[in-house]
Each structure stands twice: as C-alpha cells, then as structure tokens.
Length: 185
Ligand code: SF4
Ligand code: SF4
Image 1: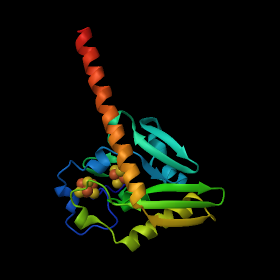
Image 2: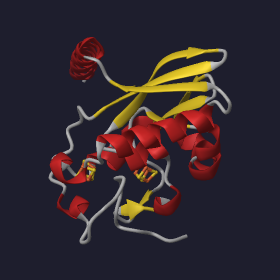
Image 3: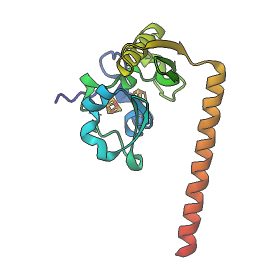
Image 4: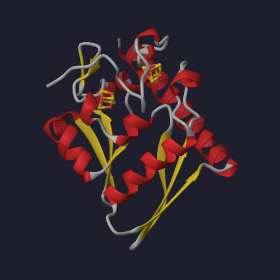
C-alpha cells in the first residue's frame, strides 16, 4: 500500500506543510472521535477493530484508538491509507458533526475550531468543506435528505463547554489516580 507523508488535509501543496507541524501531527497521533461511514470503516478501520473504541450514531461509526494510541493507520510518520482516507480526515482542519438525524434525513454541521497550527495554510474553502460533508452524508444515509450548514454560535459555545468539562473531569480523575498510587506505595 502506498505510504505518503501527507497525513491529512483536503489538498496539500508540495512540500507537505504538515511536516512542519509544531504539535506532533496531533490530528493522527491523538485521534479521537473520528466519524466515518460504514464504507469508510470497512475500507480503513475494520482490520484494526480490536485497537479501537467504536461508538455508533446510526449508520455512522465514531472511532477512537484505545489507550490514547495513534490512529492504527499511522505508520512511519505518514498515513498508510492516504489515498483512501475517510472524508473526516480529508476535511481536517475542518471537523464534521451530526446535528440531527431522522428516519429519512440527516443534518450535518462543520467547524474549523481546531488547534491545527497550520490552519491558515491547510484549510479548505468553505465550498470544498461543504461538498465533502455532503458526500459524507450521502454515503452515510443513501437516499436521505442531507442538510449541511456551518456550526452556529450557540453550538460552538455548547461544544466548548462540553470540551472544558471533559478536560476538567479527566484532570481530576488523573490526580485522584495519582494520589491513590502514591498513598498505596
Ligand atoms: S495538526 Fe495540522 S499541521 Fe499538524 S499534522 Fe494535523 S493537519 Fe497537519
Ligand atoms: S486514517 Fe490516516 S489521515 Fe486519517 S487519522 Fe488515520 S493516519 Fe490520519
């Protein structure tokens, strides 16, 4: 399988700007909550299912590597499935999310509120991002009505609050684990 150095992004100028990533190519090495369709899962992740925490949002898979590991497709500083990588990877530094799902429709949102240090260089155009998100929706729920709109201000505030709460809880959990270990030593 071709192994390319370019880890992510809708389109990359050459040389690959991700090689200058100042946060350790965090998007692939600390992967969390990647959304993929069943087809993308079968293509890129089914062979690594034992290494993944997998949640389902209807027909969509939400995947996170176990134990904080890197994406299982991350090999030797590059993506082993680059040409076939899922849309959520193509989209980055945009990220997609499911806003609402009904029996015959799917409302999808997207935002670029990510900590990629090269966002200004890598970000796809809004039109390109919207097209990729729509393709994702069409593949996830074929024949359904797909609505695609950017994240609203209220959604952004709620997401940031959720993220802060999660980070706080995780710090508290780590601290109490540390105290228990030190106490029992
Ligand atoms: S965080 Fe940004 S610069 Fe770093 S590897 Fe990912 S897309 Fe590239
Ligand atoms: S599939 Fe490739 S681009 Fe996507 S997170 Fe994994 S290594 Fe990165």
